[in-house]
Amino acid sequence: MKNIDSTVLEFEKALLQINRMRAAEIFEQCHASGKGFEELELIAIQSLENIGDGWESGTISLSQVYMSGVICEELIDKYLPKFQIKRTDIPKMAIAVLLDHHALGKRIVYSILRAGGFEIMDFGQGLSVEELVSKTVENQIEILLISTLMLPSALKVKIMKEQLASHGATPKIIVGGAPFRLDKNLWLTVGADADGKNASNIIKTIEVLMKGVE
Ligand code: B12
Image 1 (spheres, rainbow, N blue to C red):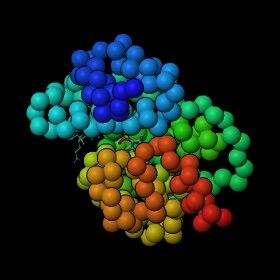
Image 2 (tube, protein in one colour):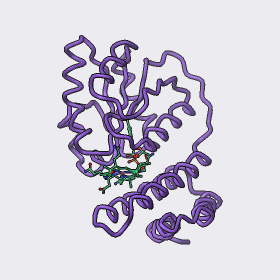
Image 3 (cartoon, rainbow, N blue to C red):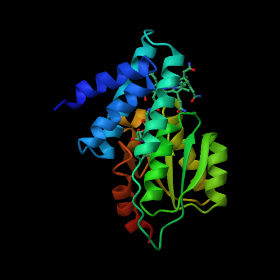
């Protein structure tokens, strides 16, 4: 059986060649061999991370980065968990991408939560601090999930939290995205209540936080 590193390399190669069929075949092989969504998610994230590094070092074009994101989005949609749990007494929750426009991670987290029986508002992407604060206050959000893929956006979470507090709003804040995966303590630095390294563990994180919002 292939290990995850060789699968990541093969998947990355298919993405860079914009070979949708090969990428789909690799996902399907993993799925058929009993791998869960968490592993597919890991393959996509690691491949895209390598591709991002290649772009940063000038060996990969932005169009390749873009198309790789599009292919992953299509594939991930197909394999997202479909379980349907009915829940009651759920806190008011919302998710948004603060400042930047990297929306794939948010989409996965949103879909996993919906499939897990949570009602969650999607505030969209590219929101300014002020926009996110006003939507959060207006909708009386109790748990706010923020995705950021760029460090400058991640650092704005702290300011956002201060602005929320000045409006008397103190939702629990869960952050996620590349900057938080790279710096394990960044979520604490920006004053979040929790972080999520991937989307698959988000339901557990919310369940723990819910104990604090009852
Ligand atoms: C695809 C991609 C793009 C695509 C985005 C397409 C789209 N619709 O999203 C395009 C080509 C448009 C793009 C553009 C740009 N990009 Co870009 N991009 C990437 C890349 C390669 C992958 C991102 C991705 O989709 N990953 C896959 C998803 C599934 O992973 P994820 O978002 O991390 O989400 C997972 C977890 O983090 C977690 N998660 C995420 N959010 C949340 C939230 C919560 C609450 C929880 C619990 C969990 C969670 O769960 C998700 C699923 O497991 C990254 C590389 C990287 N290291 O991430 C660069 C990267 C983020 N981009 C970067 C840059 C610089 C840019 C541009 C500025 C480039 C330019 N000069 O134009 C623009 C900016 C656009 C903008 N204003 O937002 C840099 C950021 C550097 C930095 N230090 O800030 C990176 C890191 C590349 C690099 N190594 O330099 N990009």
